[in-house]
Length: 553
Ligand SMILES: C[C@@H](O)[C@H](NC(=O)OP(=O)(O)OC[C@H]1O[C@@H](n2cnc3c(N)ncnc32)[C@H](O)[C@@H]1O)C(=O)O
Ligand SMILES: Nc1ncnc2c1ncn2[C@@H]1O[C@H](COP(=O)(O)OP(=O)(O)OP(=O)(O)O)[C@@H](O)[C@H]1O
Ligand SMILES: [Fe+2]
Image 1 (cartoon, protein in one colour):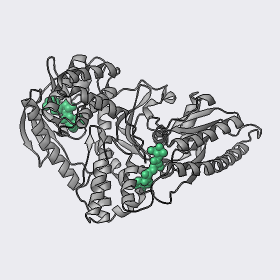
Image 2 (cartoon, helix red, strand yellow):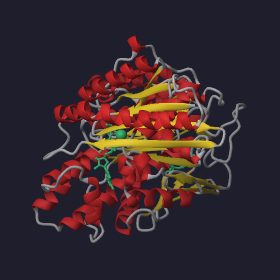
Image 3 (cartoon, protein in one colour):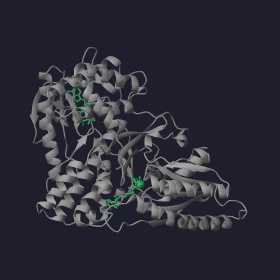
Image 4 (cartoon, protein in one colour):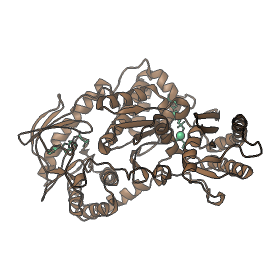
């Protein structure tokens, strides 16, 4: 079987041939990169580049396919490929349209089916394909995107993502401030080698994150005369630690023990080192494809195209319009349909709880960032050092979060939200001792009444001037008659509707990740929130805005 793939979402005019025979498989990639003279990627110039380069790379790939067909003794009058796969989106509209036009023309000329591939799903599938992992969590770190995905019920679910720009674009904007040419990522990596650590913002909300604060601070640091290598070094340390932390949270939430990396920023050695260390520390397997499959390339389009073709997932020409905002969670994953429904959550059907149920018995529970042990009705929570992070950053995060967790857990109790009593706190050691509350985690026992409680509790703390920061279904403990909030380590004081809405967004995402029918639960939580919070209506409006935000900037 042979598939021709075409990629051209932004900078890479690329075509590739994926061949699978009885003796194995091969991928040959032909790429012509667009390099802007100055500034970042210009959509018009990029499209101009596609117009010239796509026909050439496609012809080169076709020649390769013809040679392979001849070597295999196939009829030269037959098409040398079984299908043409192309990147449908996300990406720059003008570029996508040129690629799609070329793909349609080629499919018609060769009289073979057309396959429309989601570029972001291709970024993650190439890692799954090459690693042979069955059910990994996937971190896509590319120019225009940054998200963490897990597979459940026939779709890739976005467990967390950037709330503003993609990770590569954030770095590229910083290097434009320095007057460096595009792309900036590799240059920052080089300069970072001689740098020392300086303090910069670090923003993680549940499994979401944002780069705007750290990027402005990095530019400001340059303007204030900090050494360029120190800023580059610290920028990498913080940004990649944020991505690694959310990847760890996603592994913990989904009980997965495999992680794959995708996207152009994945070429960065420091990012790969951090992810590798994190996985080592928690006993998970990590895989990053080789660089030619990380940066934009048609090889990944051809490989996923082949899986989709095998599954009969082809599209008629008239339905092949491009989709500049195509999200990975909109794709029906037809090529994994033979797999089990896909579950995560660690509970068995009868409601009994597995090893990860939480602090039910006298044993240790490994959370996303801490180890929790129960003794005599008390819970000891210890944030151990994370070796992937810079020691200064690691200490700062552990101390700050431990201190905030103690403070906000007590503050929430004072305003009437059930939380554990804090018996002891040692921020330096990252240790807290709490009262043990609830019988199980909410994710094991989701009901409408309980999610309503969560909606009301969030409204109450918001009205008291702070947010939880990570209200997932694992951070709520339930018993017959009570719903407790725990784990306030990412909380902070704020009166902004945006921050309040983010709490609701994190909760909704975790419902989508842990419940089979999240919609009813989600509306129940939102209704209860609206009725209770002073500014409930305004916060829910903001939530809708956050959810609708185009993130491909
Ligand atoms: C929609 C699509 O067009 C887009 N593609 C894209 O962004 O190209 P990609 O090849 O995946 O990533 C390019 C980004 O990857 C960064 N990059 C490349 N090498 C890097 C390195 N060694 N360290 C950090 N960043 C690096 C570049 O600075 C640039 O921002 C996407 O996947 O989001
Ligand atoms: N006070 C408590 N009473 C009962 N169980 C608790 C308590 N604190 C923590 N646990 C249990 O331990 C688990 C991990 O705790 P916690 O969420 O605070 O740690 P974490 O490492 O931040 O985990 P995550 O980020 O996955 O939420 C919880 O899901 C819960 O089951
Ligand atoms: Fe990409």
